Length: 420
Image (cartoon, rainbow, N blue to C red; front, side):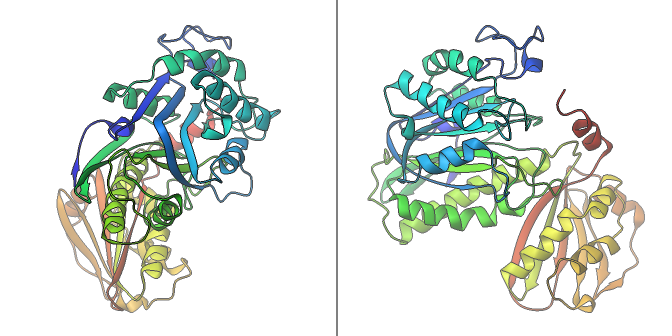
């Protein structure tokens, strides 16, 4: 397996597009709510991914009891296990607002009419501010330009990735290539997510395209194996969104033998999807709202993987740990404290803690007790773009890694005036 360019258009038979239609008033150069010229200088806010043939599709969604209308519509539309593509907008979550369900359905109706397909052939996603009515007029009028802009050029994936961004500061995009059954198989993904990120998933949208031949049932099994070990292991602020959606489309264009059970081909595809989702998850955590560094916590030598995950998740989710990382303060007692309220049973006197980064590593705790360490070295280690908190137990051979970010002044600033 190797990384390749192309994002969601790297897989055979997929095209994408992303344009600016003016969903949100502040995304228009003139500051007005009415439609702005397509292809103008405003932020891209409408995306489309479309296959040239019907796809097996599987997804996972927010666990929040308050779900946006697009989540319900998408669940209904992919219940058959098949779809052709997805239309998504940023700038408005289409949640808890007048006519939300009607507008989500209208997005599907409009894209279906323009492509000659059926509304049920499309998933629909939205992201942005909650509680405001969607500017459906801008979307409907923009669909012809959106479809007209479909392309398999890598720039099209870039456009789509940027069109689903909200408070993200960088796009999240990746593609890989591997061999399955003597055929070259490609997977490509894009994602958005910066705030309201917390297991299980957050205000994230992520779409993966794949040209492998696989049955919908087995694809669903694959997704449900991968998501708990990737997107469900990131946290930024402890909030879970109304809109988070992860979808995988597989159109069979690679021509590999159909994957219809968990054989070696399934495992190869799982490894590839695990890699794609891990990279996207890491990039979301690193781009957390206001974040200055990525925090990775790995808990090793645990009795069970589930326990290791619970402990690691508690550490990266701790506001005190996140604040210490922002200040590059080796306050390792906060790590043990976060483990202690995780709900997972462990022996505090059988814990080692080490901080590491590109600047080196510093052991700060052994068997639950403080170690003498170089404070200046610790400061250097904790001042890098990625800091790893390595926790060792003395229970078994299982481990898990979770990702988060530091907590900065900028997080409050961003969320204090989010609607403007």
